[in-house]
Image (tube, rainbow, N blue to C red; front, side):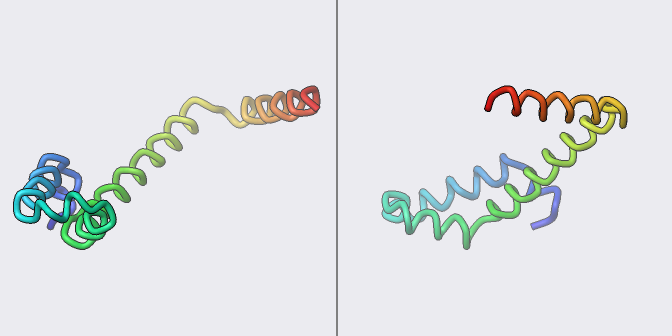
Length: 86
């Protein structure tokens, strides 16, 4: 499966549904179903790519909205807040 297909939840969902139709007895056994999903689908790769992109987006947004001086100020406030809470 190509990278673009790995990120297509529609393709992944249709693959999972096809497995449920082909093996209905497995979908009732949670452990067997999870093993089947892991071995027969690209679910793990899909989730890995999705989480990586989410983290990259968060990092990009944080660095775009935060200057070096404001990072120091917010860190100082966090430290002060923690000390007050003790």
